[in-house]
View 1: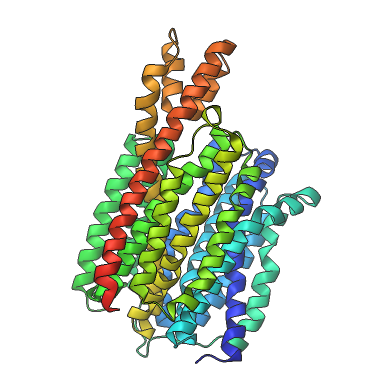
View 2 (view 1 turned 120 degrees about the vertical axis):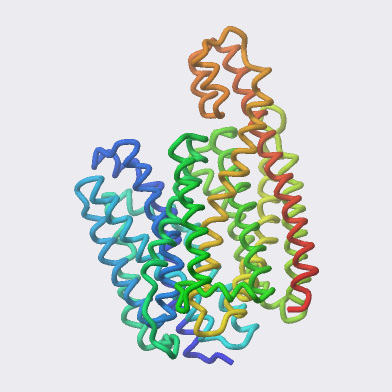
Length: 501
């Protein structure tokens, strides 16, 4: 069983986790001021936001396997130092191009931190229940960072320039560099092997175009560039898998998938990320474009959801001592299904009272978040525990990659479904006499409908906005119904395949 040193080490590991989540959420507040200061174009603004996530997703597999080869602590320390230097470069960037480059470096460094952290937890906590507790604390730190990120960012931006939000992480990483060698154990494979650089190139050529294509598909719909990116990513993904199965020293040991526990749990986590990513996209959009809240106020309304997930994740290890994992996962999925059913009954403000809508939205969001927490905590524990200790980095990287891909796919797939429902419901209810351009803009998405309404006489504008809000809410209902059906499928998998775990 882990002692005081291991739990103190967990506190040190929580620092980079907290920082990475803060860094993800705080940039939304800093984007307007840095865009004005650097005179960033709309395309450059998108790359400033997206390149960080692209690099994390692309390099997770490489970094996880690299940690298995050179040692998890060494990789974590290297990533922390690189993240600090890249953050300083970002803070003092004088052009948008330099900031994009710095954000890319931060993403690569961040990709080395996440799997290293999970792999070290795997090798510090050998007792299953202690490991679940450690993972629940780790997840809670990530969620706390998402909550306090906008608050801390707002305070920094009130007193300092936008570069201050990037310098926030430097002292945190320095503290990790000082305490890490004292508190964290080193662990790596017994046999020193070379890294498969061809596999690295294939994995990047598969994941980066996939993430980019999915993001563009979500943002702009089907076009030539997103189609080519998706086909390219899928093709290189097939090449990567076939080559990894053939060579003797692969970048990613696909034999891990021979374990039913590993494969089934990873599938459950992937589908969960798809469903939660898509539904979260709609609930945040609902608060902003239907209810009309600012991004900051909408984020504050989502705090109860995060608090519910934190509470559930901390309770999961306690309950898991008395209930079999498959039963606990199934119970969490049932709670999430109940939350989705509640979301299917929210309405636009014009058709329902605001207090009722907000109460139902918050209660349903808390239920979905609390229900999904056991999947994240126990699922991550099952994935990294199913792999040998010397393969913990690779297992952790696959867990994180499935989460990144799942969220992107969820926004794309469920977003496309919601957009289709929106267009089908709004098209027959558009005001008569709209020009082709205004008709096309209104039917494209609800943002276009809001822009079109601003150019119409008041009665027609009110009618268009009401119908657009109703159509968007109908799209949200379609997404959460599909999400409930997907969670039902996962519950069946958990109660059957994982029953022997």
